[in-house]
Length: 279
Ligand SMILES: O=C(O)CCC(=O)C(=O)O
Image 1 (cartoon, rainbow, N blue to C red):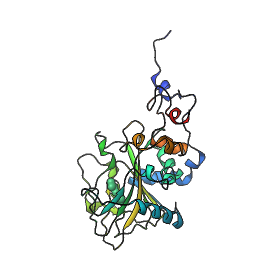
Image 2 (image 1 turned 180 degrees about the vertical axis):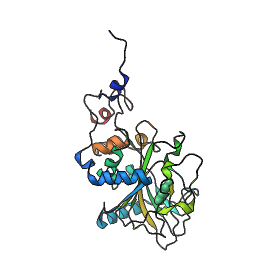
Image 3 (image 1 turned 60 degrees about the vertical axis):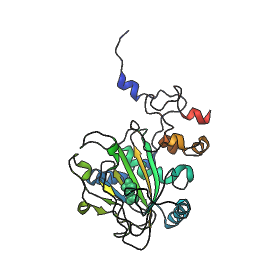
Image 4 (image 1 turned 180 degrees about the horizontal axis):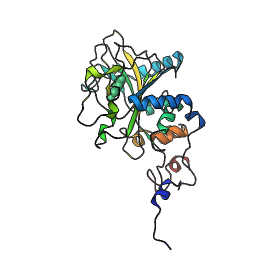
């Protein structure tokens, strides 16, 4: 018998018999997604308009407003910004945004299958809020830049995002920078987009919440994602009840951590985690 161990083959094989790896459906590949991907790779972000109707935005906003409470505890969170954390256990209203095929289709192109949701928030930037410190989201993973992104994020415009109401700002091309270069406000451009649109950016792209010089709050939803082999920012496995997870689509169950990144990362007692809620 040969002592050779085909690690690559073992890694790529689906060892789970009952719950095999979810395969992307046909709605997750299209010429539109290909075009979004080209822009994303060039600029580090892409704006996709018209994914939600005004009615859907109104429903999300009404529910989201009912969850809003405190303003930020520090300058980064924003002293005039309201955030709802642990969003998925408080409402189902943003589930479909987290698994939108246009977003999943994009991530299928640069993440390994089994990628995860990393965190979810409502972010309501009130009048008078200052520009947030510019940053990139996957700086938690202390690996030298330039490098591939280990995370990615969406900010969904539930209100119109305008030049003066706190639209997310992004620095085009900054996903390719090294560790020495710091994003400056003068380099940032606002993601101006009508309600129902989303800005999607890489974990390596410099960005921040915009200054709100208008008289109205700016309501957005963010879902962030990461590769299956790095730590999520939010601890969904502790936050979400098994009943809540049972209620989710298979795609969302996988995103919050009820999945296996081959051949066994994510296992429970040597088995697929879905056995914990289904068997
Ligand atoms: O709300 C936004 O537009 C972006 C906020 C952001 O980047 C953050 O809070 O880390």
